[in-house]
Amino acid sequence: MKIAVFPGSFDPITAGHVDLVRRAAPLFDKIIVAVGVNSQKQTLFPLEQRLAWLRAVFAHDDKVEVDHFDGLTAHYCARVGARYLLRGLRNASDFDYEKTISQLNHIIGHGLETIFLISRPAYSHISSTIVREIIRGGGDASPFLPEEIKL
Image (cartoon, rainbow, N blue to C red; front, side, top):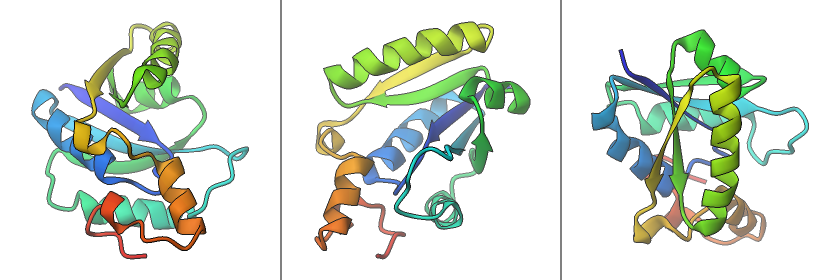
């Protein structure tokens, strides 16, 4: 079974994340959208809220599961039997960062492969960081969020 993990903080999940998962679905038997819990990272939304949003967004996607984990992504992949990581690339900066992480995960994960999908132009400007800033500033973030998320 080809299992991919799409890890992230999803604080919050964006329309770009959803597009990436749905585009990748035909490539895998199962995609686990997994919220990585990092106690050092300050999040805007609590874990349970982020998980609830993910479950709502992917409720009708049979190949998609939602989970969360602590620790290294490569160790989580080993626990769930995933041989692939799914990552999106919006720009050259993303590529440089993700390339390094993928190489480390390949070593730590004993051959764990990272599959990169390039963001569609309509989503390449969207990041959770920017969406959080819009929300903190009292702006309307709805154009960048899945329709299931109501703030």
